[in-house]
Length: 573
Image 1: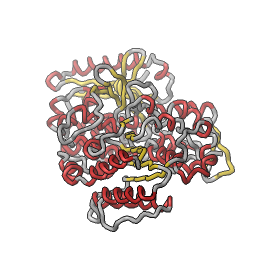
Image 2: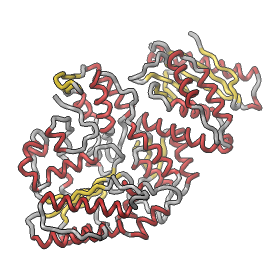
Image 3: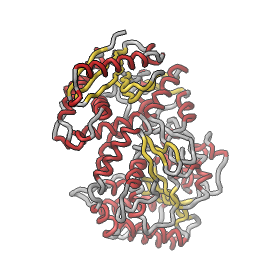
Image 4: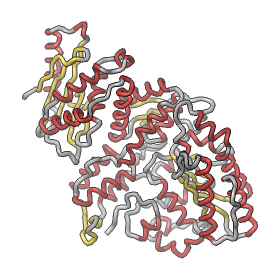
């Protein structure tokens, strides 16, 4: 019986403690055709586990464990000539913070030194580090001492989260970032040593992971011999799960958490229901224009399964709290240099559901930062994914979770700009009234209040689409309801379809048709005219079996006159 390895990125622990492992070892063959590699993916996609797997495969000290760790996996039957053939130097920069206790440079030096000390201790090398030195100095000294030993194997360097520590500086005009990485030079000089030692033949291979390409050029200018495989077709599913891998995952037998003797298997109906949820909320990531293989966020899959297997009930919140930090990252990169232009791109993505641009392999923040650079950063952090490629690449939001992160960010931004703070208790109550009783009035009242306090910039472009956006922003707060913007029916597209999530305790679902009249054109006759248009549209939508067959579906037409609600009524069949 398998266990779910949520939060576990140690390959040896997963393979020896009977945790589920999705086989990614076939990528080893492909990677060996290249020596110095850079691979970027959003957070929580399984990068650290992949590095741990490479470490277990190539480490000369793990040769006696090869069968136990890899039996049943692709690479066990198809080993390469480099199996267990390297001394592994593994570095991790995820734990570095810039604070009063320790500067980023001190943290960087500390992590490099720890990595080298672990390297020395693991292989029992006769190497002594100097007490006080730079990161580059520590590495250069260790390499010179390693060369003196005249050992039979070369070094494979594995670097996890190479950019994590620097991304905290990506705010405002970016000068803090440049001050650290260009003028200070301690990071660049470190990578210059890696390049130097690779040219000398001591470091034969390198595999480096991270999130953002903005630091690649600034941090590693001294290391310009690596191959960025981020968008190469062959590696799109090297981390993350494919559709087929998720189907296989759902078909396994698992040990019930806290009840190891109890076996849990999902029936076909459960598997299909969960797969549908996964597709809507965790899927949609396409990392190459030359591929059509979309992948799921693997950590979110494990998060869901860990909760579901306890009592065969979905988690109350479909998004792992760790992923919610993405909203802060959006704020940081929106504020980076061209803030107003970046903000317009965010609005366009939310409104049009897509944006066109060109991915930048290296973002040179010290030279420029334009629309394509901003789109590339959104792609890097998982807020955009490739839809299709033509003259320009078309990007879109990958799934509903990401859509809600955008909306929550936009709601907070609007409140900040207008100096208006929405009452969270009233927002929560309005959503409860909608879900428990099908009453749209409290939510509509909040929308009208929000519009009244909207910033002068947003008042200029005020229209029906903006009203709909406010509904979407307010409803992004709940994990009990999914909101579909422009839901397709047989007879057109409904403005809002508010549907229960798989784990929802709500009773009612809601269909809303919105209408808007300018204040200058508001008359009783016009209000009634557009209201009746909405009624006809609602009745046409209900010809669609996906809507007509739903229980407890409330239907509303809401007419706004400027910021005010002119008429809002439930449509009774």
